[in-house]
Image (cartoon, rainbow, N blue to C red; front, side, top):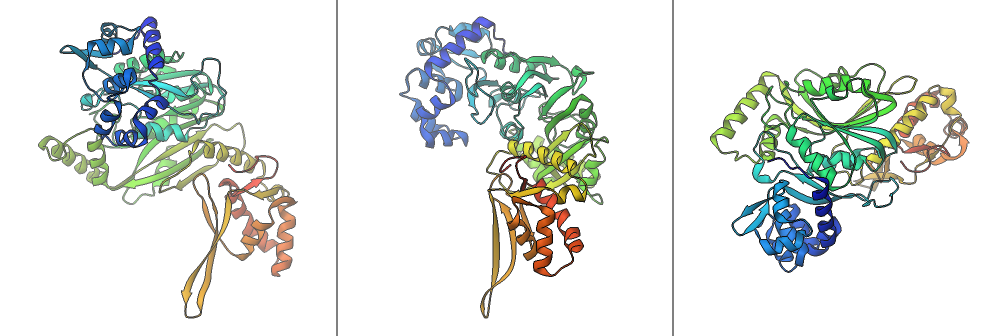
Length: 509
C-alpha cells in the first residue's frame, strides 16, 4: 500500500508528533547519546530500554522507529488527534492483534546547517521523512530513507538562495526538503510511483509546497531550466538490468551517468549549478578522467571529485549487502557471479565514486578539473563547492599574467605551514615542507623555500608582482623565472582556497 496523507490527516499527525516531541532533539533527549548512537548502528535493545518509560514519546519511538507492536490505547493517546484507524487508512500503520505496528518508516530528520533565513513557522531544518521499512528492502520498488548517500549529497550541496531548484530522482524527498530552505520553487521528479507517493506524503506532513512530476530522468522537465539541480541518481554500474529502482539505471555500466552529464547543462540557467553523486568505471587501458571528460558537453565548468575506488569484488559485495542479501545464499552467489563476469568482460579494474559539480558559466573559458579526495572529510563540502565556484570566477577574471600579478592575495586563516624532518646521525634534518588547510577538504601542497616565502608575504598589502620582485632580489633569481614558476602554483593555491583574493572573497572558503 502506498501512503496517502490528506491535508486533515497530515495536520493531525503533525500536531501529534510535535506535542509528543517526536523531533530529532526530542528523540535524542529521550534515548541519550549512547542509545541513540547504538540505534544508528542497528542495535535496537539500548533504544528499547531508554524508551520504555518515555510516555507518549516513548510509544512513538517504539512504534515508528523500533518496529514494535504497541497497544491500541497507548497508540490512540500518542497519535491524538489522529485516530489509529485513520493512520492505517493513510498507509502509516497496520493492525497487529490487539495493537498497532508501523507500516512505513516515519522518523524525524534534522539539519540545522542550512544557511537560509528562517520564516515564521519554519521548523529550522527539522522535518519528518517517510520511507519503506527494512522488511521491504528486497522489493524492486523499495524506497530508501535517509541513508549514507542522501546525507553525503546533502552535505556537499551549495545552499545559496536560488529561484528554482530541481531534485532529479527525488525518492522519498530528502534533497527537496533541504532545497525548500534556500530555493524559491522546488520541483522533484521520479519514475517510481511508490517513491512519488512517499515524497508527496513527506511534503504533506511537513506542510511544504513541492512540485512533483512523474517520469524518467529529464523527460518530465523537457524545455525547462533551473538555477540549481541536485540528484542522487541510480548510479551503481553493472549489467543492463533493474533489480532495485533506487540504485539500478537499467543501462550498461556507467552509460546512464554519461547521458545525464551530457544533458544536464541544457536544463541550467546561465550561472546555474548541478550537483550529483556518481560512479564511473576504471577500464583497463583507459584513464578515468579522460573517460568522464568525454561525457561533458563543451562550455561547462566541471569539478569531478573522486572519493573512493572499489575493486570489482568489493563493488559487488557492497551493493549486495546494501540490498540486505545473504551473500552465501545460492541466488546471491549467482547474481554476484553474473555481475563479476560482466565486469570482467568490460575490462573493469575498479569502480570510482564521487561528486560531480557542473556549472553553465555566463561567459569566459570553461574550467574542467578532476581531483581525488580520499579519506574522511570532517566539514560539509557544500561551502567548499560555493568557494570553488567563486574562486574559479575570480581566476577567470584574472586569466592573464598581468591581471594575476596585479592582484593582492592573502593566506587563508586556516592555512598552516608544516615542516618535516628525518632522523639521521646528526639529529633531525629538515627534508621538506607543505602548506595545508585545516578546514574543508584539508588541501595540502608541497612547497620549497621560495614558495613558502612568497606565501608568507601574501598578506593583502602588496600586489603579487611586487612580492615576486622582492623574492627575486632576496634569492638572486631572475624575476621572469620566478614568475613562470610561481603563477601556475598561485592559481592552484587560489583554486584550493589556500590563497584568498584580499577583500573580494572574504576569509577562508
